[in-house]
Image (tube, rainbow over all chains, first blue to last red; front, side, top):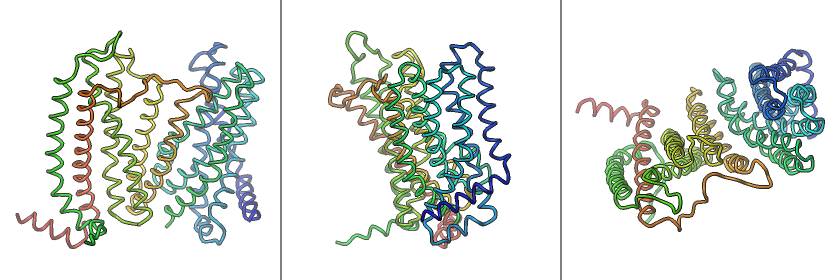
Length: 223
Length: 252
């Protein structure tokens, strides 16, 4: 069973590595959105430090949502997805592998670039560390929940806008605790523990239930 | 006596029943609205509260609270019918879920709208990022998402099932969303809305609030059945019994 997971993961990563620009677009979208905010709200140090966590998290939300459209789209167009539905392997495992690959390509780069973005907003070193940790725990949840929406809107006209309408309200809890953790870390680093614990709990629950829901959605979309 | 409930699960047999019930529900709606509004305007106190009383404007409670209740309750009903549809594969359940959605969205909007007008004199602001306000807004987005997804898919069967799944996921997320907005700091929760307790409300106010809720219930039934009838006609347009009805109506 693990081999199935591994094979799908490796396949998706190889495919993405053949077309690297797709991966980089998400990353640069994130960096550009975050860089534009100071130009809009002013570059005062104190304002930026308060806005920073929220802006970074909202940008991460949008970036991961934009990338979601591509999660199943290519496989849907060339018919691979239908073959996956027909295999004897559990579909939710395949979906989990696809989501994992998707996160490695779109979520993990955001985590790694976070220190750079944090410096733009004059965040302290501790806050940057907490931001990386919260993004590390939170962005996989975004991908997992988003996969449900991506599966539901498969092959629809105007799917991207629709996807944001369906999925963004469901992202609220992650946004609240993700940016909350970074804000609190400025005051006392020990206080971030409950936030991180909650994000971890979200990740566990999402990893169990979201693939099941997404595979049900895929079956509906492809029947 | 064995009553066959599944008989009414067929659009063909439910269509005439719904047609007969619609006027009944409209009459009940109007009667209850009349009683509720009369009681709310003339049989209740002029002001509410002790040292810093709310004057006449508190009367918006008779619209605000029932609409907020209905908005949540109708979402549960929507999800209930959607789940029944997914499990038993009955066409009418999906149509029912579909017919409830716009009414629910309207009530959600009304709850936000009346809340804003109540908030202005009593809190000094139209909008605040209070948990109940924000989660009501999230609920509104969920209704809109359901309607948008359903109308974006051309194939009716896929549209029904996809939006049903979305509604169920939404229902699971609503408590999490509410809780996360309510307690942005996991160690303490704060809210602008006072704790509500139905037992402590003055009798006349409670009476007219409950009558208004019943009126909105009847209104929901009436509009849902009206919408359901047109959905049935649209979807079953090819079937013989719909053709019969249409030709009969055309002759009359």
